[in-house]
Amino acid sequence: MTNQDLEKLVDTSDEWITTRTGIKERRIIKRGEKTSDYCIRAARQAMEAAGVVAEELDYIILATISGDMRFPATAIFVQAALGAVNAAAWDISATCSGFLFALHEAEALIALGRAKRILAIGSELLTPMTDYTDRGTCILFGDGAGAVVVTEAEDEERGVLSTYIGTSGDQADLLYCIGSGTAGSFSSGLATNGEHLLRMNGNEVFKNAVRTMGKAAVTTLKRAGLNTDEVDWLVPHQANIRIIEATASRLHLPMEKVIVTIHKYGNTSSASVPTALDEARRDGRIRDGQVVLCVAFGGGFTWGGAAIRF
Ligand code: UT7
Image (cartoon, rainbow, N blue to C red; front, side, top):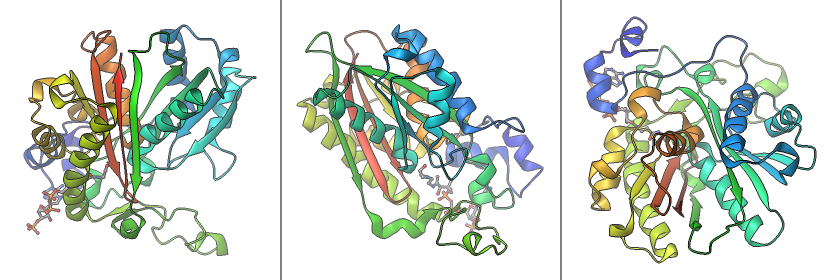
């Protein structure tokens, strides 16, 4: 869906969307596609790249706020499709920071010796919950999935150097979707009155995102014992190019060191960091031995960071 397509739906323009968000187009699901379909495709590509087969997986952790069903967890469908018979699979809900929460969990489980190989996925189909009459939100979101396989490090110098996650539950009213949750009218069988749609106070979320992404990046680096000048690549959550630029500026990193995909995919929430990581790894920008700093911020609020040496 291009900005020109959106010009036909709401009072907006390619010029406004491009200058205020950096987005030119976003990917939209085909009718009938489910979040698990996206996850399965991403998971297969990640396992192939890692040289890991499904039976070797100990856990599958899927970050999503847009799962196939209320229950069971979408990760269950991914497990079945992959044939990951030795894995336990579950979902986590941490909005746009979800993938970094999954990575945090995966890294901890491996460090504790509870697992050797974990599939961590971030996937969202946000367009079904997007209100295409609200120009403040409908221009932003796209659908996607990204996956990584986290394994025990063969070399102590490489791997996940630090992770950091945080939440502040007192600002949940700034970005939410009631959906079929018990806070809404769905559970009493009443009409949903638009409760299935995502609601956001864009401006307030923007200000919090700028403040928090920078802080989360600094904390993540500190935990890894790294200085900013040791970072080869910043892989930020792709919500708005102005938020990305502000985060890079806070770290004194030039934009040449920042992986940007927002112009092509829009905001894909928990899928944005793993898809950006994958793209930069496959096209040869992220090379072995380089340090990558990932950082994200999302509704709740939630935030997270990870420093990784590839
Ligand atoms: O994924 C993590 C969470 N999400 C985010 O981080 C998103 C954070 N928020 C944002 O990216 C930005 O706040 C938006 C892109 C959503 C909005 O940009 P903004 O610079 O904060 O604009 P605004 O909401 O302050 O609105 C400025 C003006 C308003 O008009 P008036 O009142 O000044 O006349 C809006 O009505 O822009 C208007 N506007 C639009 N105009 C054309 C809002 N949306 C649009 C639009 N096209 N699509």
